[in-house]
Image (cartoon, rainbow, N blue to C red; front, side):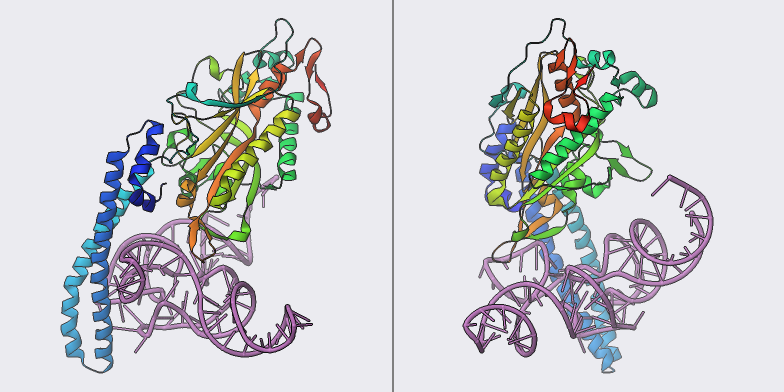
Length: 423
RNA sequence: GGAGGAAUGGCAGAGUGGUCGAAUGCGGCAGUCUUGAAAACUGUUGAGGGUCACACCUCCGGGGGUUCGAAUCCCUCUUCCUCCGCCA
């Protein structure tokens, strides 16, 4: 959520920046400012009424103590109107504040200067590319065929147990999954991230904190009986560790990593692009989360990008990095780099990581602050990234490493797997 | 799931209707002393709204109520503790 102060003081700049998202925010921001003004006016009136009635109450107390009951009773009558007034003003205040809040929830984050203009993923800017695209054997197979051929992933079995998009990993497939998780966590902890095991269901407040609610309510599985949500990403529980927290500057940088399954309803997705592991309702992901001093957050973002690069290099996967354009940028992000692995057998790029700086947008909702050198509370910056999402990494490994003698396991994973070939 | 108890500032812990945003201790910060540190002493130290700055207002787990007045009384929800039941 944007800070009111920023909208108040730099409205023109905000409108201009949001144009990159192809949004004309002018009327929305005017609405916010109007409500904000109203809120403060009502608050001031309410405060005055309360001050008056506080004063009277004290006088009444004194009068009773000194035995002047009659005078006290006379004063009591005066408080009746004040009470009515404060009740009305209080209701007005609540309504205005709620209206203001819900309007603020509808305004996305301000894109960073680096974000290119654009309306769709076509306009994303390729900023880096590395790794050789392998020459595959003739009649190379996409991963869903390989999965069947080597009996390592069973999609039909998942359908039977749960439904489409819930694969069952078997044998070496399951072991490879576990290997990837351990490998990713080891890389992240070696880079100074503290490993966290967090709940896979979260409450409403956590959903609001990181911005999944109210915006993407339909994308999460909702356990209505207990009003909990299955997490769509570890970002939600891990970042919410620090909700309602005031850090010291010396606490920076905060670096967490966690492995969790992720659950997404993916309502509205269909077609060839959701085949196999490309888009699932349940998948595994290892996430990195950072909380930073505002002056350091972009340095941190670059560091996270380097970190993910390193991992992909070790996995020997060809990949590229995109800077997302305004039209493709997530609602809460200020700047996002997407990592994509090239799947040779599918002849397309697969998104495997998304690394973002949210600046103060999440922190404002989370009330995640720090004390600056003057002892004043300031909003921190939050960042997160996948390091990494498993299914498409797995797809990339299976497809790019297929040979006539089976699928070669990348060297770094062999110690984790205990085998070097799937055949 | 059943019965009982509890929830107060970073932590511990007083406060059972008025002058309580809240004693006291610990911790934190600043200072005195010291070559330096420790100890001791002195001061300071919750969050938010509001204001140029003050004033002022709100917050004692959340919500609602009683009252002129609520941390304190009532209702409700949540969480924690103890006991019982069930159980990976």
